[in-house]
Image 1 (cartoon, helix red, strand yellow):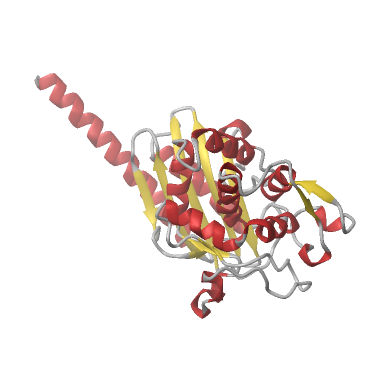
Image 2: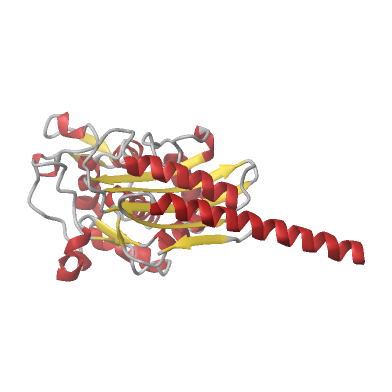
Length: 299
């Protein structure tokens, strides 16, 4: 019995030391960074969590496309939409920023499944607007309400990037509220995004089959300059987001020592930089490694 107690005490001390080391490293990295950082992570195998400002609302940028995808899967499952139905590309939905559909001819008809894939895999802004036009932003928010994610709101369609912007349209009820204008495309909290990721991993978003399919799409996402920057591709199912002063990333990480769901948002950066080596991307990558190490997911 004494040996067992001593072993347990050593394990507890080691775990505490590991967490304290993580906390020091994370705090130092954030203190040295010019910007506001909010994050939350959970080891889905042990239940251990770590957060900084995890309940504070943040701008989503393109990470809202994950909730939008969930709402499409709900619509298809409920018979309100079909993967084989075609959506027509219109000039009014074409916007600048990530994606390629804006380069295609008006009137092009695409299957709903392809449009959703493009919305996630290459974060296509025009595809996102086509999807919101089809299912509505209010349907996205209703889907989030199913899971108790009241801070996660889709506000409107994408306006575009830079100086070439479309007029705001496609508003949800939440998006019309004056207090939500500052969030732009959408709002969430790091904790709510991790809750959504955990439900996906548990097969609880729409259905087990739908959850598996959504994770498979997230694994094909091509923008991995943040959480996935220095991780094996097969480990990461993610969705990233970018604005002039913001970088965000949410991911399920299937590391050798466990599954970790994490969400990191970096905002208020002083310099606009859309290169892969944006300071926010690098910070998110470094924080991801610290979180994985501290929560026991890897050596």
